[in-house]
Length: 471
Ligand code: UGA
Image (tube, helix red, strand yellow):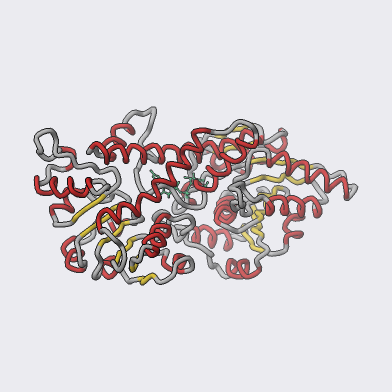
């Protein structure tokens, strides 16, 4: 049983703290925000994350998980300290590390015995070295010769399935510069090790890069398939079929090949920008990551063009938007394409009605003049078009008849490709997906891959394509 302090009770800190407590360690989660700590002590999780509340409660009840604002006491009481504070993007896209260095400084100012300082939040390569130097410098100023280690243990948690990802990771990455640090971290993660989770043991800088390389690669996969979706739209191909066939090649794999409105959230946009930024500063700029960022920006903006291509001038038009969070199973709207699209449509004079099962409260803080509704059908009332911006499960089986009746014009922009284009067209909707070409074939016959719909749908689709969207 290791005594652990986790600095920062944001998303990463809280999931890590609860998870490590569940492994049998004693964990103190620290946050300077006393309000937040008071709520946590009351069993209230400050954000929505599936099953996290349960794990927190279980470990609070076991007395393995405690919350405090008393940083000094938490540092003194722990041997291993995880830094899980925020690293928001700075002005130039670089990660703002002031909270990380602030935490490291406080540790150095407070420690009186050996500490293992583990960097958990995502930081540019080289930060571990800087943290190590900073702690050494402060200790020197204090004239204290206290031993310490710095390690990197990046997280690979997806919002919405973070608890599951923590309990059953594909791998655990442990970056250290000493045997002692490696042993302590291996011991902390022993329950996973017993489960045969691969452990990657390496140095700190390699561990730091693994995190960025993983996120940037996934982001690149998304931008790649989004580019293919544009080509599909130009040639009348179907990107879902392209992605499926690509994914069947085990060297490629099927995951993160869903074409859509571009990636969002608090990680991919920030991490790709930071990687582009620090690789440039190191004199080894990443052409691929820069292209990934550019493609994503274009893809996000193209969603507005799609709506316009279906509806025409947006001035005075009513648009229903389903889904506000950057992905399902979360109330997080950071860098959500839905919000960018809504703001863009409003600028062009559209009236927006929106519904999300979980994220309306968080979205309301970012949006103005949006009519939030009780459900999808209410959002669709009198709408000139319906936009599916986030693929919540409850949007996958909408009653098309009810929807059509509610809307002024039966038009759907499906940014997440959750509907079969042929089915919607057969139900009398004008439909645009992402990369869902609808080629009539050389003889004008419906393409087999699109579900074998009617020739009239093919014609309609052809018209929509001419206007600049997918058919
Ligand atoms: C991502 C990574 O998946 C985690 O492994 C990582 O730990 C985390 O960032 C982090 O750095 O903290 P997350 O941002 O929660 O997790 O969400 P993802 O499920 O990866 O989705 C990111 C974005 O990509 C979303 O906007 C999603 O809609 C989009 N996406 C994802 C696609 O457009 N297509 C896909 O095929 C997959």
